[in-house]
Image 1 (cartoon, one colour):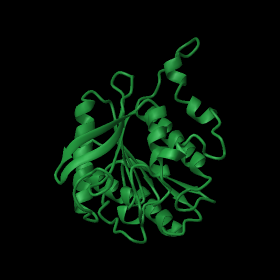
Image 2: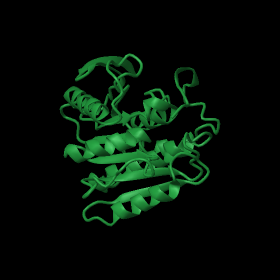
Image 3: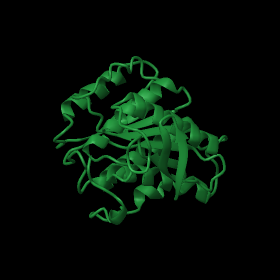
Image 4: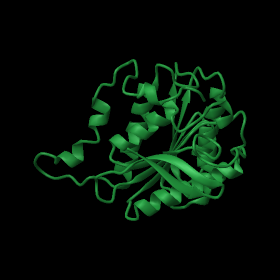
Length: 255
């Protein structure tokens, strides 16, 4: 993982980037929660999503919205952050011109921005939205939703109303030509304290499933090659219950 800087419409944007060693690896862009409540690219939920895609062989970028960390500019509560996400996706795709798939993943405010980006970019194949703030933001722009995806919600979320997110997912799933999976982590609060492991696994299982549906592995005799089985090791490997796989000294737990 390396530190990167690239130019946005409000000035320099700071990010962290992982380049996959796989040829034609898919790419994923990760968006952080509301900066007005301490959200940055070093949020633990954001890092969990980043790690999940990295471990599955993606090239992955997470970055700070304008006015956060070393990213220049001022918070705009939507339009400016959407512009930042657009520039970040362009940068990621320019770094990976032969990527076979493009994913967007966002947490809370970042999920709202990510789904707006999804509507504007037909090159995005799938999405993961974690705790989309359905009780605070308008998501009616998802009509129709242009791609399938996963919505994850904590059942004990004290900021986002779980029932409203579940209703949103059910409504989206009624649209044609898309499949919206919904996962409720029953004991998860808004920051998924003590449940980052669950978030990591739910997200990883969905990505593996979606990739297999899009590009199924042909059956053949004999043992599978390592490349065909290594992704599933994500689900089999046990992660410590204390979420120690997260680099606590480098990350934050604010929204």
